[in-house]
Image 1 (tube, helix red, strand yellow):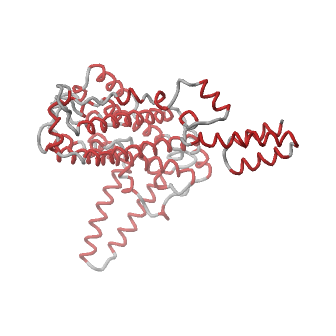
Image 2 (cartoon, helix red, strand yellow; image 1 turned 30 degrees about the horizontal axis):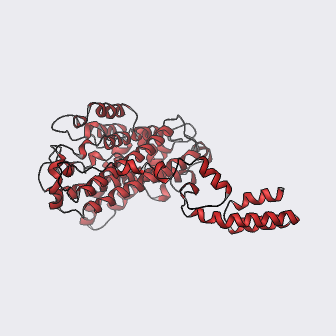
Image 3 (tube, one colour; image 1 turned 180 degrees about the horizontal axis):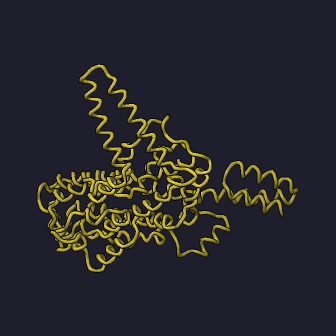
Length: 430
């Protein structure tokens, strides 16, 4: 019986190796084992058919295995339709164009389904972003959490790719097809999507960078309760702000043990001095003038990073978003990314830029779709339509703008400061 029980457990793996091991052990159990083998083989033959659906027997076919049958009877109230609320879900697509008793406009169902799916994806993105914000809210983030964070960011990126691709489905609708039901939308507008406003706030779109709605706060387009929820999100630390605090804690930036920033600054100034020497020694006068002019521009750019007062001035002007200390941490991760412990932090910065990139692609594709469908007409919500949407594709709506500009401050690999083991060990948790 011990052999039989062990073999039954292995049989549940439904792999050839597992079944082979099960058969071997049962045969070692003698005559009783042979009877068990016959019974389990019979059960396996039938239960194999219940695996047609990848999520298991609850949504599968007709299994004869008594255990599965018992489980189904025990939980008979749950099936595919009831678990996913399919009847309720399919009842939510109600075209406005058919409410007067006439035949609904053909393309309105497409329009409704696409936008409802958008809202479902927004819900999932918010779920992932909230979980990431919770992890970054801790005073210290263990290295083992970084993989979890990276996986969830990757999921958000993939969802945004789907959002972008769904625009092409809407593009199968013609302007004339849209016109058949557009007037029925009244003042309904995508501008009124509470979840998208929440998403912007939780990622870190700055209130002062938003385009006003009819010269009013952007929440004026929302209902009172929705506006209250969105405004509350403004008061909570955004992902961008939490990332900024995390970068400020980067070990080894400036300490008694190791001063990365001091070494980086010396490396930059030494590199620029060598380039100036090379330019001044160039015989061709025209070439020398061009090289010196280019060098002066580089020196100004690096000065805006190395001199805290210049960086802070750019933050006040809106040209940069994160603090000087956070910028130092981002530079350290960016230039030291070859070190194994920096791999995931570097990937995280890349993923945050990917999110901004996908949001920009989605906004851009939406702009082109709106221009194709309504030209220069006003939007249904009273906005300027195409002109308003085009304004949201600028850098003012880009949350992680500073990370896109980090490549400006790269230096040759052989000049990058070497990190001691003591700093690398501290970086495992910060």
